[in-house]
Length: 366
Image (cartoon, rainbow, N blue to C red; front, top):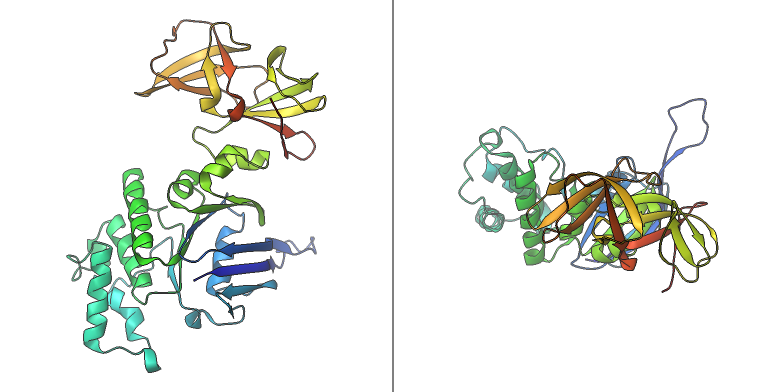
């Protein structure tokens, strides 16, 4: 099911009585979510991603704008008539019901022509339980399940009606790191097997990038960038997107362009053809450093962390806007831990320039 958001805006009254302007949670959001794709809504707390999800499912009404499921305008349609499945952050399972009863609950509330027989409901419940791999837990209560198992029950309950759209609101935030990895892989598998259009809300950029067909990066209710995860990572439109995506985060420096060359401090680090002379903010991905004895960028060595196949060089530079600089290089390189300085050349495709005025990205040639 294709989902179209058309100039979607949501405002809330400001609780600060001294400020008359409304709080804009979602601001003029326009986006077409292709049929059968998994879309990640990504951004920090308060950016409007969960509000967007609430608007799509009908729990909130937009201040302005339209929502379409396929060709159907569902903007004014109540949640129960939209055909959406919702998985909440806290799972919201009924504690007094068994796993089977929790999954059956949405089917038991179907009415009219959609009503199923008891046998049909049981068959659907067992099919979906097998899909999410909890078919052996059907007689247990939620309190007898692990966090990951509870999450699967919540997903099964949302899927059992085969909704037109599946909405996941921070579904992995209550799980430990290992279980998060396993469960997000399961969510991707289930989504591919069912082909249901899915919108996944998270503040965890690694989570969103690993399973989404496309990501939507939001800030303060405004969409910053939409695209395939790797494309957004490789080509951020502004400093916010560059800083938000990536682990370890991007290294940020004060820099200047003079005569087509980029300077960080007094070091002339690379050519940036086509950029006028100006002060800039420089972003360098951790993997954008190449250890080189005579490299143009000089940093003071703080430490070396061995991570198996890679080495993380921790250093400082007076022009760095981060407390430390992290450079990821191959473990085949050797760095003397007692060295005072390290020098690098830079990979041009991992270096980004941003305007000091509005933090928009500045393109440069060779």
